Length: 301
Image (cartoon, rainbow, N blue to C red; front, side, top):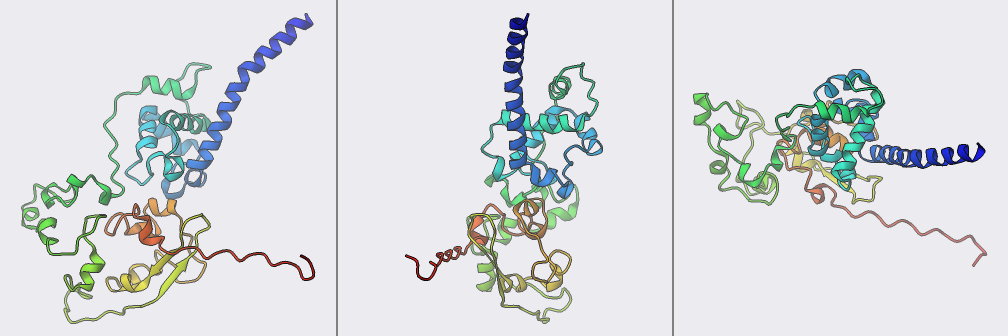
């Protein structure tokens, strides 16, 4: 009898080990690719383990949840959670979604003992594709700078839309670039090809241009960020950013790529009306200072 119990215990251990390993991987993958937003609910992300946040999402079907995780959402969640998740396979990302759904224990109509994700996936109905339009400057090349009646922003049925100048016609004489909407606005401004007004009703009004650079040193192993006030204040009044977006006080602003990708901080403009965050070197332009070599104690070799 003891031998049978020993064999049963060994078989049970062999069956449980892969499941435990899978759970450990899902937890690690979640922490790497998803936790920065879903742990706190930043930017409206459904919080891990919160049934109220997840119930309507799960009710819409696992197929939609999988699609959102793999392709991103219009609200700003990047595909596969962003840079940290892009090396995971589609199956691994789907496993992480199952892990998150299991944490909320939402009633899915699943049969007893069946995995929640599998049951919901089997019952899911075909859904229209989720359009990833968070960063409209990253549309395919043939979808950029469309006439107002075709850009998805203006009402094509409105007669006034047809009176608007097509972007390609209006930007034909501006300095070209390889990013965003293919126009280098700063170079165009410096070349006097565009002359923004400070006041709508007063063409002679002059603004205050601040020539002040701010260096931000990220903790990650990326180049430092140089923020030039001059290029921004040549276009914008200080009140456009301060204090609603950035508190004008040292150490008072938390800036991270997840926040920017969710349309906060720098992402309020970059990715919508300014060059997209895909151009890393435009901001991360300064080499990190070399770390000082440790000094040897006096009297020791």
